[in-house]
Length: 228
Length: 358
Image (cartoon, rainbow over all chains, first blue to last red; front, side):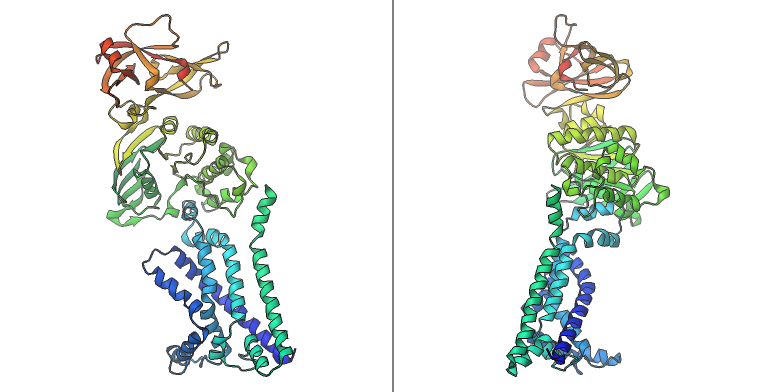
């Protein structure tokens, strides 16, 4: 592989790791809120979170580009704060990825939280645990499989994104040229051998992620069988 | 005193109760499924959003008039549900520690070891909840609640999810709890036999309202309440084991107030032990003269107090007093008529020894 390819791999890993970290921090309270809310507007919130699942990535990228651009609301805000403009920067890619991968993190977490019986949390309350205490001592440990799934799906999905990256980040080597874009470049240039190395690597990576996911979410069950 | 004045619209009825329960012993909330008794318990715990006032011995937990509402985790209570609701990711030891760790050391009045010993769960410490039987889970849940040294213990049908064998396994622990700890308990149940064995005070509920509330023995002897109607209607008598007859494997129970004694099968308790016997109305018969040549092992002089119609037109309920203790007999109306029973009349109350389980 060329140095440019390795740079794309490194950039992709950084983007996916940072995006996943932010999503876990932002997505966990969001998922908890969605799981526990009795609001009439729950379907609306859930739909907004799920939007990136159904929208073509280019549509999302287009609107994010406008929003973060010089005339966009977010763009004016970042400029006023002295942060400059986000499009065609790594930071812009992170923001876009966070939004694009949001449902992949929030939905497994939300399902895991919803699976926790209300009475388990009530029991914790009667044992003197305050709401935040209940969240960290009961809800989060019980949602562990959902947390693992969320992190892995969020990471893998960010690694694989293409449309949003192209719209927001363009194709700037060492700054915004991630794996999927590099692969596209190789194919366009008829460099099939190089394309194979990247594409094949992605296939292996995806497989490894899924194997790890299923393995990590299983040991409880295996332990239980062994006890019987 | 446990005060609860609660108002909450539910599906199909309005919960509206005003309770003053003794802050000693076990108070049972008894009634058919869906009568609102669980909601009362949840409101005491701060888990159901009822309007009104809740206070325990002057500690106010909720008072809408002064906009006071203490959240569940700041109320000194223990709560045991029908399902044990143990934390599946923690072993038994850490389940027990969960509440204990959240109580300041100077507020701990019950040692964890005491709770473990009381519920007989010492051998389960390293087990995970999903490897326990239903009865074991429920005992761990009770110990877990006790470990927080609650000022009030709330129990919501803790035996209802257990089969008969498991129920028989857990019930003695509940009785022991009652004897050895001075924590007031509010116990929700729709099983009269549990209530008869455990409660001191009985609250009868129906359709979100309190039908009657009072000391258990008196409540069970009232002929105007639904508890007097069922097949298992009857009173409870508190007694002390006076002697054991080793030859015939029988025990004589001395009733309170010098009212006489009852022979039962020997339950294995040493003389001096306090026991409670349940005497079902259908197991009591009345005679106007003392009977000789009868297989019935217990005959006690009594006075007829009240005669009431039973559910079936063929039957009557008769309340008699043995000294001050009430006993209820279910007779046919023909028998009551043939004996010419009248209030104030002296009779002999007969109870088969085999019908009594100490």
